[in-house]
Length: 247
Image (tube, rainbow, N blue to C red; front, side, top):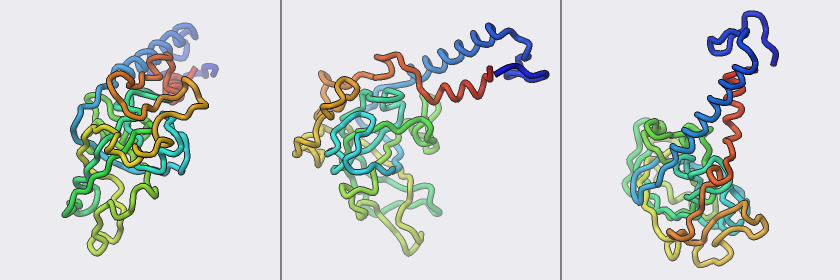
């Protein structure tokens, strides 16, 4: 985009040379990308997180490339910082977590259920940083002060509505939307409901090296980070930078 009289680029006069602006643009892009990659971290074996839910059609192939049959059992996307990649597969693909509901603090008054039900999910998808619940970075947690968010595939026949505690008489609705939860990493076999169904375990076979979803994650078969191994840039960051530095 050509400069117009009086236009500035974040306080830089438009008279600055195109070469200098391009250098600044590239420097910013590389620093943002490097910071994002460096912000990935190893998920502790136990801890606290938030949980939202999203629509995942049955038999859909999500970011990890897990088989479509996995969608017939409890699955979730995980926040980008824990997923370990900006797209495709990451180290959390295929990992199973036991999630326990604690409370729903966004309701008025905050909802503290009498029971704390748990469910074991398999991570099959990325919850991208465009979501406020999944955009945490080290030092900048999400609105519930967590780094990790699990985005449960729900509604789903794999997760009965009775799983979520309710109090319709007081609140007038059944879906509290966002929960505080605790989590624990567990082995998929035998804890995940889909582990006894061979078709639900592993990756689809027709997409080759572009997918990674171990049936059971161990130290020997953890997925690498697609972003790091392929040196690809987060696609949404191109838009952010193009808006910030109009050339």
